[in-house]
Image (cartoon, rainbow, N blue to C red; front, side):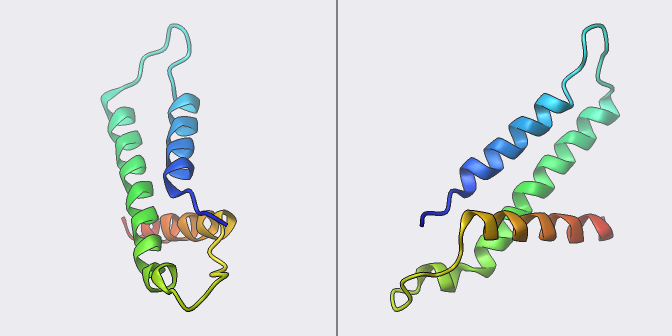
Length: 88
């Protein structure tokens, strides 16, 4: 099964931006915009960390089913994101 990290990250960022979009008549403060940018960057970094940690498994030609499914990737990215937020 193929892993689609770009689709996951793109979808997550899109949903985040859509859900944080200003409602008619409301404006976004500079702080809110900076916070959204920080969280998006942290999510992207979390995805890169997960891929980096799994790179030897991903590149292994000897192992057919690597078990690195989309769901597995999503769970690891969320866990990494949450742990990164604890120390930021």
